[in-house]
Amino acid sequence: MGKSIKLFRINGIPIGLHPSWFIIFVFLTWSLANGYFADRASSLPFTGIWALGIVTSLLFFASVLAHELGHAFVALRNRIPVKSISLFFLGGVAEIEREPDAPGEEFRIAIAGPMVSLALALVFNSLSQVSGGLPYMGAAFDYLARVNLLLGVFNLIPGFPMDGGRILRATIWKLTGDHYQATRAASFTGQLVAFGFIAYGVFSVFTGNLMNGIWMGFIGMFLLNLAGSASAQARLQQKLDGINVDRVMNRHYPSVPGEATLEQLVSETLAENSQGTFLVIDNEKPPGILTLREITKVPRHLWSRIRAREVMKPWERLIQISPDTPVLTALQEMEAADLRMVPVVEGLQVKGILSREQVRHYLKLRTELGS
Ligand SMILES: [Zn+2]
Image: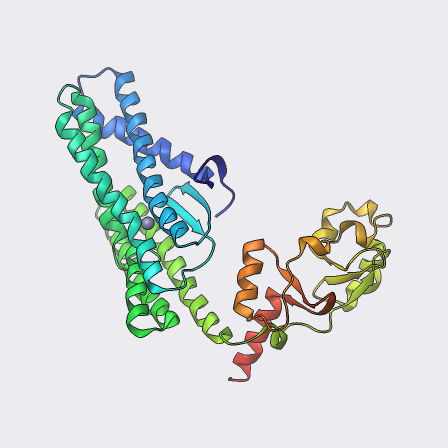
């Protein structure tokens, strides 16, 4: 998913809207105004019906946000940082910084969201009972009660990556003590659920319910994709478990002097260095890292004037990994810092370079050697 537009923070968590959210917001408001409220509040004027549609739509997305905040607050309580919460066209997503360490944590984080939705269903249901003086709001509350109930129940379907799938994973994890096996089992049920959605979508299209069918198919494809990559990732993590950085890192990385110009780098060194990563050794500064990404940011006509030390990622902006760090930990740290590669250091000495490509290469070799 691409960048979200940041709105505000709640408890330090940035809340954002993905551009795709605006489409679904307009669509929901439109269908509420033209369908639900045109029917339930037909005596209202046109503007009233639309105002009701907008308010209800906003309250719906506030409910989705509350669901995600449920996950996020429990994650924070378990000392797992929450990067952000975004609303997008399929709902909301709370991006937590790392996977929980224990099945109990995962269970509590996963169940918190649906609990919030079910509680909101009760609250809106009570509001719809007592809003006798405001009959139109009664219709809105009634809708919100039902949609929150649906949100709670739907998310409890036991297919990863849905909340119910996470609950299933936590349960298997608790019972077997094997996190990878649990992830693979929960991803498998996730794929089954996703195929179910797609099949239902296709069925709906052929029975004349085009919009509903496309929508279901879309959700199915989305879930299938996530479940598949979770399963692949579990398999990968299992292979890397217990392996330290020094087994995987590249010791033969090219180094270049800090005063080399980009022109020199590209014409002289790049041909022999297919990875496009350089360690920049400079007498005036601690070493830095230069990749093709930094080089291509500089306009070509300046390459003869700009020196490696001016555009390299400096020492203090790199995370440093020691040779005895587990590869999985290193990958997590790289992910969190959005780095494709890091120097492997002991003291101030660089021992090698670890990149995601390097890890992929290592896994491929191991697969080919059948180990
Ligand atoms: Zn959830």
